[in-house]
Amino acid sequence: MAAERLVVIGGDAAGMSAASQARRLRTSDELEIVAFERSGFTSYSACGIPYWVGGAVPRHEDLIARTPKEHRERGIDLRMGTEVTELDVDGRRVRARDLASGAEEWTAYDKLVIATGARPLRPDLPGIDAPGVHGAQTIDDGRALLESLAAAGGERRAVVVGGGYIGVEMAEALLGRGFEVTLVTRGEQPMNSLDPDLGRLVTEAMERSGIRVVTGAEVTEVLTHESGRVRAVATASATYPADVVVLGLGVAPRTELARAAGLPLGPSGALRTDAAMRVRGHENIWAGGDCVEVLDLVSGRHRHIALGTHANKQGQVIGSNVGGGYGTFPGVVGTAVTKVCDTEIARTGLTEAQAREEGLRFVTASIESTNVAGYYPGATLMTVKMLAELRTGRLLGTQIVGGAGAAKRIDIAAVALTARMTVEQMTALDLGYAPPFSSVWDPVLVAARRAVSAVRATG
Image (cartoon, rainbow, N blue to C red; front, side):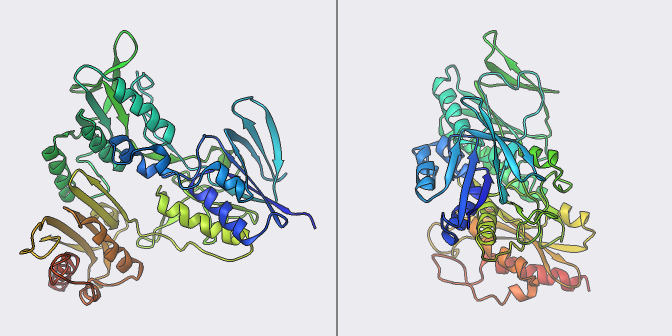
């Protein structure tokens, strides 16, 4: 009996996790695996790029979990520098082009995995493609940016456009490289995934670290020298000199192939799948990673959330199903963490604005506490904010901003959200305690107690 063929489009987290898991379950005699990747790298941590640029990670090789050679040694026909340009769903085949030679060919499949990822948002502005303007999504982006940083003369000024996770992380990285850094965001504060009161804490932390934060400002143009190289970033009201510009404006799902093939997309433009990560209405096609929507377990809606944690888990689920096993991806609660210099930032569940959009009635509770017992050396402050549903007391979301040891406490809330716990149930959680790690009442539980009081006060 001839082997089935699995074709994988995309060689990073979701795609190669799926291919690797399928190979563990089925031999090469049973399942031929062909994977196409347009870039020169596979299975790497894009989330680590700011820390490589900043110097905390010495080499880009440190970000790579598995090389193309290692994948091939495991029986995966991995074709690098090859872009899939067309998907023929009825004919069960894909057209791929070798980017070096331009040669194209069709490859048939029995099973298909779409893991095309996301593309960085790049506004159509004058000067946006000038030398010295960089993205920060791929290893090639990181290389180009490091070359620009090394070549920068003059006053070593950098402007980061965008105040999300990448923007905040890249601002820290550039500061660590000795640049004078300005972050420009059109939002009311950096980190619009937080409520404004927590976002203000992030702004204050960045400014204490020496990063200039400009809010409520939309970039209108990138200005250049006569040589064509970037010299400044302009908004409607001001101009910010720059020897280097980094764009951190977020991403959009890369689903042009899927759209052209008539596959189902959600409101975000990302692919819609079932719990097994199978593309809806297509028995032999799966999709995972930054090109799909995921179920938000708190709101019950599907959202596009581009995170490597989801991509790797989804790839494992897909590989299990393709390989003859069974797996499902139940959904997410929207957990994310980052840091800027000495300040850690975390969130999970819904913000106030998101809860209002869902028509939920809720109360909020905020507390300030320390990462360790207050009398223990090295205690630093953290702020914890909780949202709880009115009357039921169900936890809806948590945000944390603080010093060392603050961010990973968000995992307590993430588990509570997944379990649909109330804030009152949270107060009884048996968490670890010793003075070097926490006060007797962990800050998350202190916030839960405050939330319980707020729920009770509303009747």
